[in-house]
Image (cartoon, rainbow, N blue to C red; front, side, top):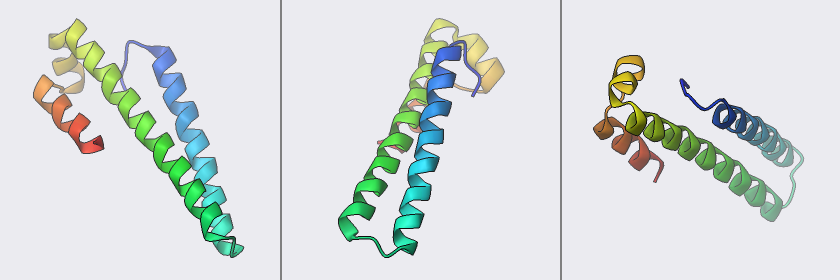
Length: 91
């Protein structure tokens, strides 16, 4: 993730680490035969964390692309059309 916003990068990494911990909890819950409600609640938390991380990555790239479209294209190979596709992949 190349970005001009180090805080966004830090937030994204923290969110992904949290999601990894939640996924470990889902796996443990299944292995321990925990109730369905508990497993699905944890899965929902993982999914939400991953979605938010994805949206943060795309929104940061959009901001970079708007600020300096030539640099975004040259450094990351991103065009507005590609960003739109990436955004829609998350929807």
